[in-house]
Length: 442
Ligand SMILES: Cc1ncc(COP(=O)(O)O)c(C=O)c1O
Image 1 (cartoon, helix red, strand yellow):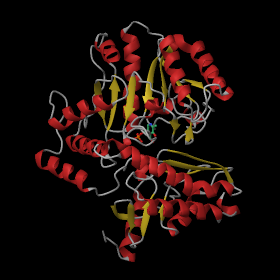
Image 2 (cartoon, helix red, strand yellow):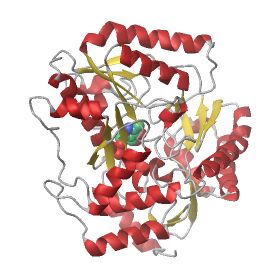
Image 3 (cartoon, protein in one colour):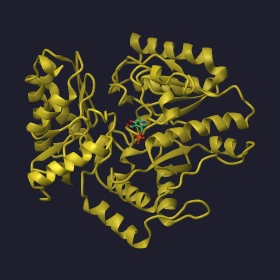
Image 4 (cartoon, helix red, strand yellow):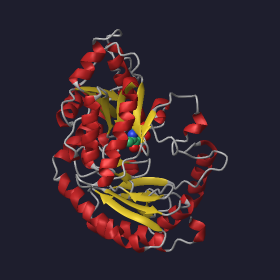
């Protein structure tokens, strides 16, 4: 995959980027360094100077099959020869219809109706809109608020932001610009908590109290099942999730499961809801949906929810993005899901879980480390204090490893295809880097 640039070409690329390209959560007046990637193959990213990095990010949970995969490339090429795009209003096409059928077939529970959109944040917007329209159509006009968990992350558009953790989501900055939602405490009982665990009982009681106090004004509860991702890489008990489902039913509040990060096997189950044996009323998916190739997301609804919406005053769901159901994105999503399901992916994720546990274990003994935790294909080293991302990233890159720590969290969620030797090199790179942290790094 040699696509290297000369030092002059690389410098020119970086100068252009610095002058004009606004990166995620970045300053434009003092831009952080960007690493020029010129090619990617399997689990490796190639930098402009020829260095290769083992990718521990799967491009933000998405590239589960790695990069430049022949099956996914072929699906895109075949679709490109037929049609790159066509509007979805009043028109359908094979890739979208087949994808919606496939998604409805694999989703937890019965969620037969699929609304396609362009990104995770929009899938969340659509899910929230579905919940609001559902209650409005039943004449429950007070039910316009959402209940979310502290420590959650659901995207960067405004309604999605309103249900993110108020502190890490910096709600004070935007005060008055979006509706104020209701927040329940972050569930503290860990993934393995037993039924008689006191922390679990306290989590459920805290949630129930909040839900009970606000049920009359709530359209839905929205949460990331079992793993809270960008809000803290926090794992909680499936028993808590099962209790949430029960309580939502008891109070006639819908449950929206945001599986944008956890969907498609990342936690060891195809969907994280399966750990609790529950089905949401509305499900949001994205990220790994296309194997990380293209931006595509979906919001799935139960029969009850979609009937409720369509029997209401509007008679339709009031949403319709221009690039909805893009054929290229749908065809690569179909290929990616079929590829995943045709393989023993559970075994791969289980093996990755063992490799992450073994490889990251030495970090637990380091003085700056608060906790090491692993679930499925997610490995997290939580530090006592925030790390300097730019400095630590430079050291990781020097060791041939790509991850993007934030705050106190140094974490990895590699492509599922990563082999044991690469996984060992990845975790060794992380542990060695943390071992040599000095005062300036945090
Ligand atoms: C759980 C969850 N929901 C929603 C989003 C937003 O998705 P996108 O970045 O595609 O808009 C993310 C992104 O990280 C996420 O992790």
